[in-house]
Image (cartoon, helix red, strand yellow):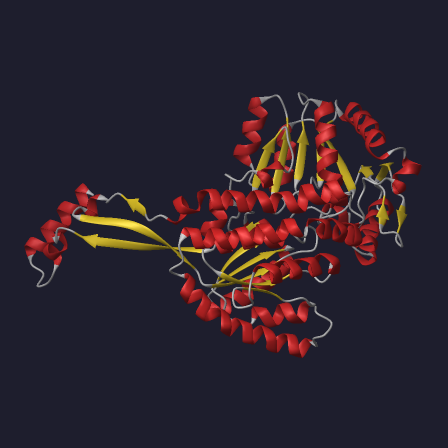
Amino acid sequence: MNQALTVTEEQQRLSRIFALQEATALRWRESTADERRQRIQRLKTAVLSHREEIVAAGFTDFAKPAAEVELTEVLPVIAEANEAMRHLKTWMSPRKVLPTRMMVGTQAYKKIEPKGRVLIISPWNYPVNLCLGPLVSALAAGNTAMIKPSEMTPAASEVIRKIINAAFTEDEVAVFEGDATIAQALLELPFNHIFFTGSPQVGKVVMAAAAKHLASVTLELGGKSPTIIDESADLRQAAQTILWAKYTNDGQTCIAPDHVYVHVKRKEAWLQECRRILEETYGTEPERQASPDLARIVNQRHTQRIQRLLEDALEKGAHLLLGGQIDVDDRYIAPTFLDQIPEHADIMREEIFGPILPIITFSEIDEVINQINQAPKPLALYIWSQNEDHTQRILQRTSSGGACINHCVVQFLHGNLPFGGVNNSGLGQAHGEYGFLAFSHERAVVRNRVRLARMFFPPYTEKTRKLVGFFMKSV
């Protein structure tokens, strides 16, 4: 939060700006594709002009490598902006709908309209990407926005505020820094749509607050995303990709592989590949804390949370395969593998959100499917297999927000696919046209051509009933 403002002053400011944005939102209902493109271009220009500050903030908040910041924070926002500007006119166009048999004699279409004033509450793990990406969609749909970034990444929040202030006036888009008190104050306002990214626990709080105003919501949540390596998998490729997906941002990624099911006959060979790749990427175990390519946990509190998960698992009988070194002051946890983990260990129930990877062996693919189905539906599912029967059986018999076959996490970057969870892992979809529609209302419009409906106007007669009977058989 801006240190010049107290919490009370910030709450007064948000009420004032919410009222200011009402007039803008009404005016923007009539905005053209060119006008919306200009707003997105302003945002894109501001992001690129603050590119080095974003990189510096990533290092301050996470000790994150510059290339990783640009890959995971800047590039996705630019790609989202470019896609929106490229396709906006098509997305905004009325969508003709063919008549059903009941609607013969009418014309119909869907008119795509802005929802109005929207709230975006973004998380700390990818603070720039997961704040400004949804903002692109909100602007494309013609909405004003109020943004609450996470207080746990203060350097990134400061840069976000600078970007928004450079691109917009406060009656268009405004940022509110601060703790949960500010978030609660925002949630009390009657927004037309709320886009929240965070944990399932907080997602329930957001959904309950939205229900008071019957506001629509998009909830991008998390969960324990499983990864499966069967007998037919390319082990080198699986090791390289899974470790990249797991240790980018030090495991603090909502779609990172949370745990790995590996066929019992391939476990040792896969672990050997993993050890080789870890040394190639981050050096030997004693050297890894000094690696410039390994980010840090966001703060000491979360480092201690992950430490407790590891200690609980080991106390309950888990076996440490590699790693395990922790330096709370440095927010460092070594890339760590565990196996033989008892089901009642906390790490098997809680989302890890860190660099610990539980390894679970299996003999039959149905064992894995049953275990996945006993847990809440995850945000992502990763399948490593050359066996098409296994792949299709897993996809058919499980549910997840998204899935990758012989890859990890790239579903987030695919602008033509919907990104979102299911049940515990989320509600609604984002990115590209799906994000545009999340912030839009599809208004149904019917235009009459032939007044066939008058056949059913009262007074009702036996002839009316016969006509109804005829339509029941023909529609």
